[in-house]
Length: 227
Image (cartoon, rainbow, N blue to C red; front, top):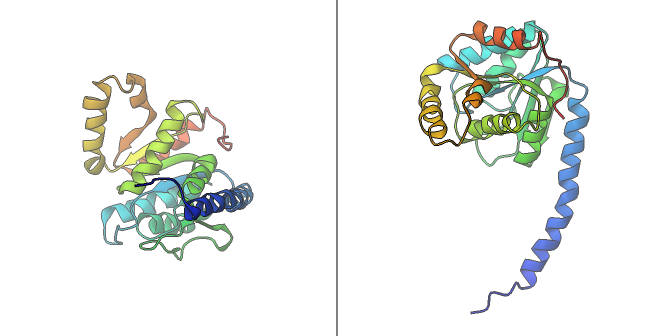
């Protein structure tokens, strides 16, 4: 059986080259819009979290506090924790930014995003670059694979010093403790991370404590885009 690439394969490769221009356009659009937005904090979490869930309200509360302190709030623009983050930002008088991704399920822009701060992406990796570039801190609430992806992207870039140190807060000890224990008892024990890497994040349950951690950090660090 022959495994040589045929005509269809060559056409796909040609289309791949043209896709670069679409990718470039997403970067340009994202950079231009976000450059006009002030210092902001990313709030990550599940799109599936319902409004009656305690973590939905925690996302509203912490985002409202951040808005009252002059931070914008960046979310993935969808429902669940993302919606709660944008809602809290507006309640606190802060900028409410949504970085929407085109998905065949789950995702649709929520009603609490500022009209001029609603960005749409086709590519996850472009969206993540924009998240990381313009976020001064990261607040992570319970979520699934997407939340983990965004969380570990930020942790890796800080650990490897590709971006400067930024506050990362895990909000919700009951949800995160199993992961934290595994990081300490397996990752660290196997020598795959360093002791100092455990200082790259804070775990707490109280929204005010989390906001204070972010505020205190910026008493000695500057607010600026990450790269």
